[in-house]
Length: 335
Ligand code: FA5
Image (cartoon, rainbow, N blue to C red):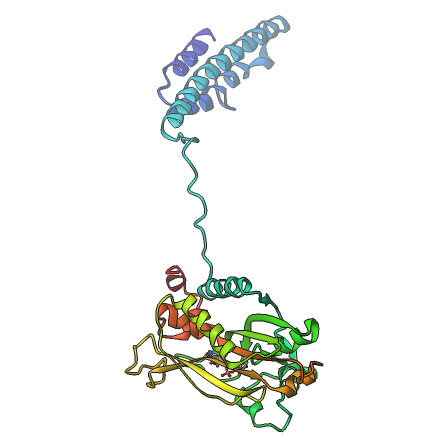
């Protein structure tokens, strides 16, 4: 019995690796191991012999287990040391952080224009994208049977509502809410049911402006338009003013800018004309003032409807409007 025990202890001591040790553990302490062999013939022993054998087995079990535990913890210790050596991390290294996003170019220019007009005493107003027919058309002197309604292809909604086709309804809301004298701008998203190409989107941004006071003239209008374009382009740009028809202004103008994509000879953005329609404007039609409860005998004003998306295209020489809403990060990361 002592020999069996000694050779088992020697095998534990000889184990070279954790795997060796595990194999020895199964042989020695397992169901068919040394202890099992020592217990095998217990039934044939006398009572005294059984007591003596029992004592021996208990002592052997303790000796084997403590030899095994000591060896095992030595192997565990070595394995841990190896891991600590190879898997350490330097917790003092600064974290890389989340890459910062950036503002969409439309938002950047919108905010620039808002700052500029605020500095000139204008209020920035917001209006709903789902509009009433009254605010989008009727109050702007565009009656139901008027061909001007066809100029802006409308997405109609249930209950006589629509997706606003321009930011001009916010003029009406501004006049209703604030009354004269009034200086306001209203940037926002507008929607038109039209086919998309290099310069036309179904969803795009405009920025409405309006000033109502006593004795407002076309000279005032031109002053603000020039201030706006100089601030945005930071260089001399060529513009032309031509008569334009909008039922809510009289006289009405179209301010076009020399195409900054091609510089004049013609391209898909300017439809080969060399000019881009950017800034329709005019003096507010007296009917519009009256419909919003303002007396045209005392007050007059100007209004404009900047094509904000097209302005962004001109400023950054973006040759296709579809890039702006593509969600393509390669495009957006350039701003
Ligand atoms: C209007 O929407 C008028 N409400 C503007 C106005 C306001 C006139 C106040 C007078 C006084 P128009 O439909 O032309 O006008 O659109 C204005 C500008 O929006 C255009 O000059 C152009 O720059 C831009 N625009 C028009 N349609 C699109 C489109 N599909 N995609 C991108 N920009 C467009």
